[in-house]
Length: 135
Image 1: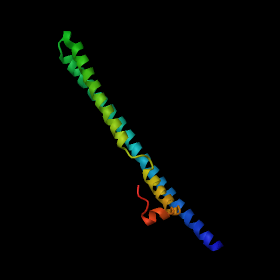
Image 2: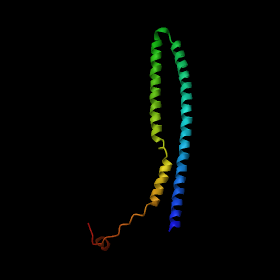
Image 3: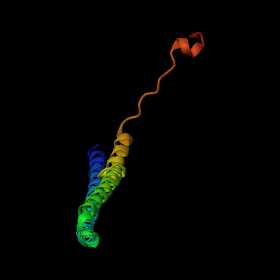
Image 4: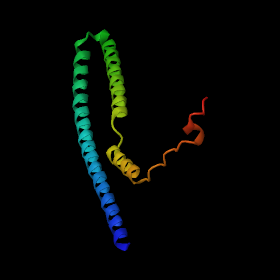
């Protein structure tokens, strides 16, 4: 009896160890992707900011003196529309991104379902077995 209990306990510990390893691998992957994404976002934003600043300055300077304010206003409107589209795309991307640890949670749910005793099947009642139970 004790040997069997030890065997079951060893199996459970091994299962939890495997699941913990899976969760730690997922966490490392998530952190690595987030680090790369943040770095790329910062570098891209800085480069895009400089490019837009100098492009805007060139456009405004190219306009005749009395119309420079209209060029600046048009550029601000254009940048605002661009920011709106970027915000909309970011929200959609965040909504479609899988939840953190989704794989680990699904594996754990499968394990829990496998460890639960089977639900007793409904046995037919005497009325329904004879066929006399007509609605």
